[in-house]
Image (cartoon, rainbow, N blue to C red; front, top):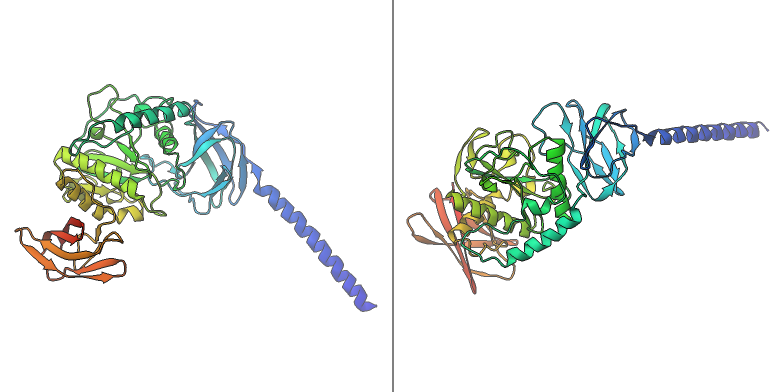
Length: 441
């Protein structure tokens, strides 16, 4: 009998332990979904609301801010980290990270802006290691959105009928079209003499295709939350190749590409900012968007008589390229690793495009890298094109036949032993002839 008593006692103990565990789990579960009371800290407008709250570590909060929003960002103190923190909205989970374009003031740390295709009225927030006072920047860009979409289509139809000229400004969606229904910027525009085109990425969604909505939310985030006079960039380019005008010239006679923006490490004079929509640490820009970027930069550099392969002194960098990245001026990942590594090829593509009078874009499938090159140069051609000859033309105009070897899907050209300087690489085959300027160091 003794074993039975022991066994029953053991079972009883286990049952009690299980019941205790269930009670504890229930308590933990309840704690994980605590309703979070927030308070409004700035005057509420139809477009913007700032809600503040106190949070504990490792807690999942349920929040109903009584303000419909199409975008949201979290603000914490500088000592906090976003590691492990996430937000749940629109039936999706978004892990938070520091914004690639932080506010110029150094009093808060701000997460990336999360943008939604539809108005949201609640969200969940997991604090991870964050504790203390936080605030949520809520943006609503819904007003006038339907009318803006209709005006966008009308604008595109009108631009298709326009006549093309050499290196003219590519088709651009005016701010007056995409900003329909949102408050207009109001400020004294400052003109700047552009010597550098700075490439950015928005570090936002790679899956959303409502680019109009994305640009509208970024505009409100910059003007309503950051308190800037206008959107920070001069232009924004979507993955479908659409180019949106950024800073508005308003009632001035200034060109939008010469208006000083707010995008380059607090040193914006002498720059024009272009933001590529997407996160290019995790994705690769589309060929269409790179083609639009090439056209837009080519137009600007042709207009200003700037060499895409040159560099000049700038307060943020003593040797800043005419075409440069945000990270070339300060500590940031922008414009993402996958876009950053393409900049050399983009510089050469712009140079080739300008040499051709901007009449025909260089085929995107024809790529040459790295630039500059030291010992080896890789050449990428369209899959259905077989080269028949490779030549280099030096600064004196001498044409040198060279040999390139197949290397997986590319062609490998040995440049070791060549005199340092610029060359024009020619690749010729049946029905095609490509040229690209290269730099040998």
